[in-house]
Length: 438
Image (cartoon, rainbow, N blue to C red; front, side):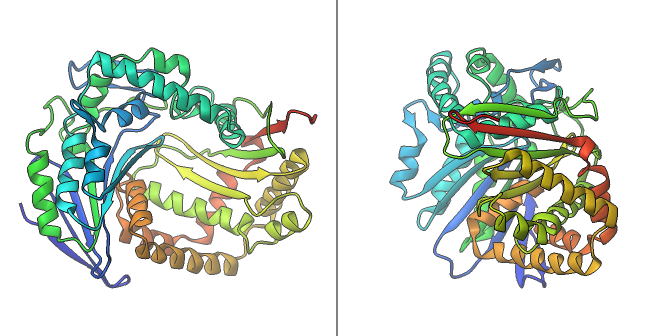
């Protein structure tokens, strides 16, 4: 198998890409002169993938919430101890994260990169799963769940997702609950592993001062022992069962809770009416949603200035648009002394924008800003790799997303206003300090 070389003139960069004999998608963006080499292995399996057709027997199964996150934890365990010790001996830093759509494994190092990359790939393609180690891990994950449960910002986010969605798995916490984790068995994890952790369902991205041909050789050898099972679609991808039967309206309009915190937290969410998009259409929707929120609530917007000057928000105010095939939503908010008033002001900004539209010059300016910030990612191998992981299973690469961002029109932004940022699709989550009332 050979690597193809693509010139990215707009970035003045060159991308090498190919597929290993076992089916792993490989991408390398060499950055000469960088001290570190960085690799990200993305698996198209996330916390929302609770139902799927098992590759072990062809039967549709459902696993408890938190299974994908649990499996991520187990990837670093070996028969003779933790793989983190091996990475440390190599002078390498390794990490991993699970979100709703995918799981990613990261490693970066200045020396011994080929050895560290081989170790990462062999860990992920050769899980060590036993009943004893799975039971032991439950206690560790339960402590993590309880720790996050005590964080007001995390709790506000979880409550908002459960307010927005009736039954879609995205309403479940990524780590699951103490109860759901206790019900996970080694057989369930093996089902998940055998179905999703195969080369055809993964993508590897390497950047930094790395040799693309050597990295490809390492990846090919590491994955050769695990080509994957034949019980799959012709393209080698697992069969997911996600999102069926989710109503278009929000589950609850408002959720409130009291916790130990210094200031109230208010998060406002909008449930998108457009789902089912794939590949370029999905990535384009993501770009349009990002620009819509930037236009309305970015730091250069009149709304942000007004909210900040009035003391309704702090400099930690944030927003995000998340578009996936079976769900899509916008989330925004943060600490505020007056949650109800902040929610009203956010709604009024949205209503006014839906009525009057967005200024075409504003959209053009923000596109230039977003394109500039996207280009700046190339100065950070870690951020670049994470962005790659968020795009690769949408069917677009870094250069393609940049082009889609450039092509976003005012009409695209207006459609987000119309189908997502609607008062009828809004929910609010509030965390009140224990000593305050609502």
